[in-house]
Length: 104
Image 1 (cartoon, rainbow, N blue to C red):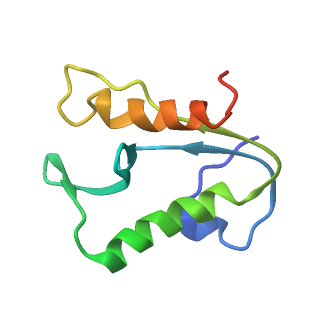
Image 2: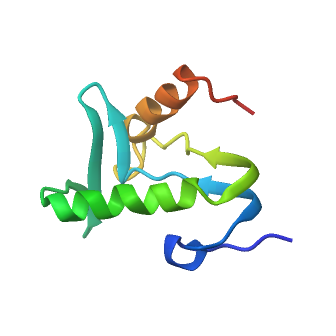
């Protein structure tokens, strides 16, 4: 049986297995990691350093809960949806694949 939880709900937990859904708010680019916030109907760059750190820390919390294994889901995107363009996800997917993550 699985449960869905936010980074707040999993703080302090140790799970055997975890599944993390990666969205377009944290993207790997040729310049490094970029942070975004979804405001209104589009993604906008996060400029404030404390908000950037907060988002990165949220992913760190989610990615450090599993003891035995983890599945990370990165959507393919949808070229017909301006909020879910494939390029929002492809570079992160390719980065993780390039550093040795197994593709299921």
